[in-house]
Image (cartoon, rainbow, N blue to C red; front, side, top):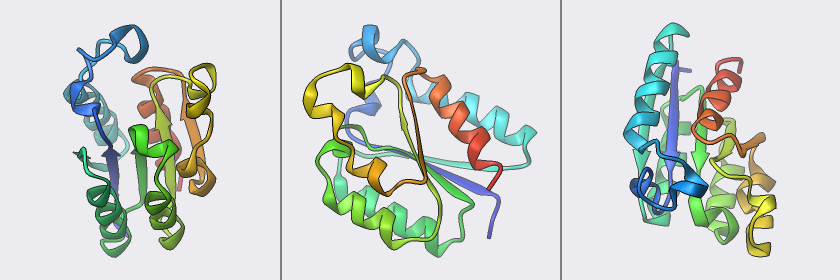
Length: 144
């Protein structure tokens, strides 16, 4: 096992900071990456942060996390959270613990966001705290 935490981000998260900031906040994905990297150094961990708008990339990266012995995966699957059986199955197929993360609280939003295929497979979920959700997930992942 390595001391690397994979931080995987799904569709549209490349637009953070400009996309609906009243919901997702003003922090960009680069801002969040910087915050995570700073805290990870304090915890003697490494961050491998990635983003893709393509479902298959998330599946491949989950498999890679397992193959490379990652300590954990922090996953914000974006809209794939609510639609992707493939991401669900990829999480179930690996032993690496996965923490689901959301900037907003999906349960306070549209009905279709109340179902999480990712959450059904993940070790836990942190949602509704904006960019802090990622930091809370990192703190949890550090304890695996």
